[in-house]
Length: 363
Image: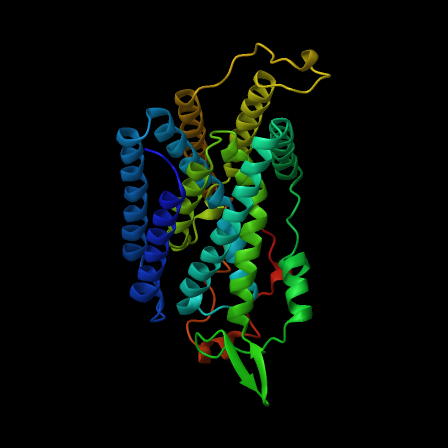
């Protein structure tokens, strides 16, 4: 198998086909998805990722297949933590439950398009300057340490209203004060405006791109093949909308998730640094020659990533059950699941719904 322009075009066309199918079959008619619907489609997209792994195994190389699967699992696990921020954005704009699918699907499609540019730029930088691996590795190690420190200190994330993307959008775009069905644009007093639904959609897309500053370097630590990096991101993002509704209300129960993600990021950071030393061309390190250091293989990476996620999930379940038995866990308020289901309900509950400044996300 050779990755050339035609391969990229076919992949992007097929991906767009899935997005269009998803839109017309599930999103165009606003409705609140059931757990059965979300679970079924999440299983479908995960099965597609498995089939794509098998396709690469028999049509490319075993190494490339493992690289894709490792990257897919890593991107999917990092996406789980990001879902809480998506919930806060949707809750901040008081997006009606029936319209949340549209916000997520189009926002994720927008993010994927921007990630493609980011991936190609990252690949070009790696091909031109191998020392970029040192930067990626150091950044992932810093991110891992910060995750643990913030979790131990109990620091809250930046309030949604204080995020640069959201603040900038609200300054430069005239926004309607109410929803107009599932429309993204409306006209009020003769002036064309965007609806809160559109602003939520744009916020989801751009904030997901910000998350890519963590996830893209992480997957480049598992493979240097741009096509695999993009494919892993695409498969992970395609199932993200279904995962959002499937895990709705369960995110707070994954109490050890930040530690698990920090471990994975630190592991990949170390792997990147080792690879950078092995391929070293910096003159002030070993005279510009490669350093004889052990490199971590794809099989080892797979076991570490899956093992860390399994331990994190099991430990979280045990702690949550123990806390519930001791009466230490209060009912959670999920900003995504407590939004109004229609315009009338939205108007009625607007004054009662908590604002984003009252919500303190856990990362």
